[in-house]
Length: 187
Image (tube, rainbow, N blue to C red; front, side, top):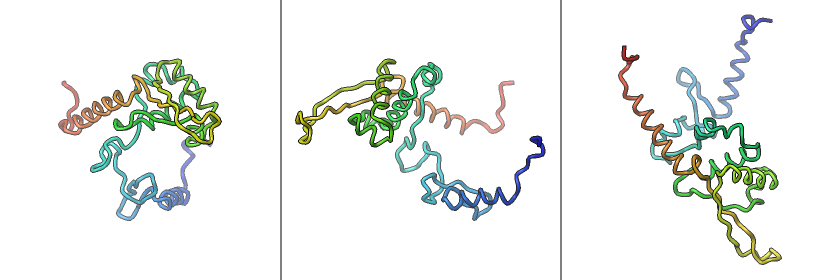
């Protein structure tokens, strides 16, 4: 069967729309389908960067340097996993570090402790990981304490550099929004 012969059947499309509607991801009440928040709350979807009255960030992004500087190819899979975890956990300027033991990282993010260690080592190798260790009292530990790491990402993935990039993206987006309609090129 050729691509031209392949058509979607109306009942199948209708079932797909119904599944999205049942999960609270769209509404079809007032004309064409309208997007709803991805958390299934039924609230209207708004762009995370434009959420009025909410945290300005709303989502974490992968900086362009990840691709432009070759990290996408150079980092190991555990390194990529820990980069994504740290990007997510250090997204806010108010909390640019994350404090977890390796076991807590593994438990919370559903990856093995050895993967956490390999991933952090990989980030260290590339000079992307900042860290500081401290001993915290732990009555159940034979030593009476446990080692806890404070981690943060270094440039180009630091919280501050990502915040600056978001500001530039916002200014760029706002600049496009006020550009004259139909303004093609210069001639």
